[in-house]
Length: 295
Image (cartoon, rainbow, N blue to C red):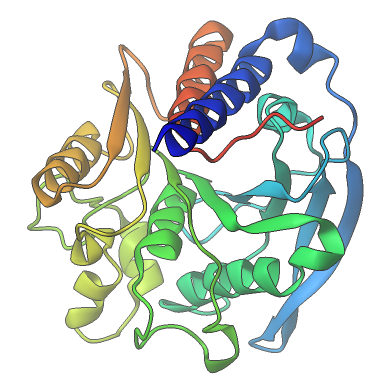
């Protein structure tokens, strides 16, 4: 009993140290450049190759937790970041980073984007040995529509009817980072994302697709923990989307943390506020044992 308690304390201490490294301005500024492997084809779909970029963290020993970043753009535009610079705090905390391309709505409508990000997670598990990933510590992270896709990627249960057959072998999602993502898509639901972009993505599919493409359909007790960020003055995705998500998670007994940004709009938070968000996210991940300080 004492040994287990000591081991838990050491794990928590290691996670806290890694989180502090990720939020320390000097550590973030001096973070070692990761080993980049770019334009990796992880899936062929709709007549095109889909790519991801890997930024392997070699500053830490042992298999690394993996941050899988999913870009926003209302499902019809946007692209993965061109470099690792925006992930400095996560790299400083010990993460490797994977950034993902997915099919946009003008190429393929729902559920294509969800299938793609799930396939990206499957690829992470299949290639964990090659890139030094810890397949038990995978964290989908998305902004705006990417936040919605991160929730879908992490919350879909095994044996669902959405995954492509080749992508059903999924890693363990340790947590989800949802930055101002849509939660309900049906216009009548609380905090729904009432944008023409939603219909553009859902298309002429059955009415049930509006529900099955909503993360709200998958909230359950044993799902991964969720870290939520939203500006309370967001003019694009209603702030109520995230307050509704938190209320549902609380009701289901799901570990979560909500970081509202006072006066914040749709992302593009001031530098100081962004640093607070990242510090809080890393502290949350550290409390879950996702981080470890093994340099």
